[in-house]
Length: 162
Image (cartoon, rainbow, N blue to C red; front, side, top):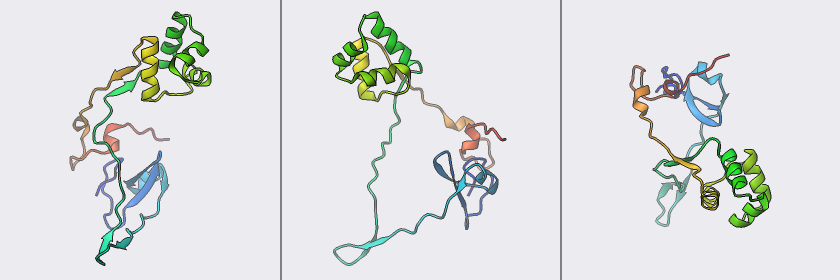
């Protein structure tokens, strides 16, 4: 087993799990200092089915296999504001056209709120602008450079150490 950050070997009998930036990963002792060490995951609970046999408890997972193909452009807030102003609409007018509150328009134009896909489509249609751009797939195999040939977070990112 290898560290998910740097790729160093990790003990399989007693792996260290650390929460780093909101993700729990199996890491070496050195990389565990970057986050908080987590307790071992709980053992799976068993339940009996109608026939009296024990089954592991299965949770429903709603993961989508496909990655998003479109992404919101970086300067969406200024584009929305400029398009609205070019049509000589107030924020109230735009809010009425797309059936949203003025406070939502204010937060979008100030960059404090990122619109979801549904709201982005409404803005694109009402203002006749393009806010979504297609995302290119990245070949992660180009980042493999450790001995085992596995991808680790450390292969892809540069870690800034203090």
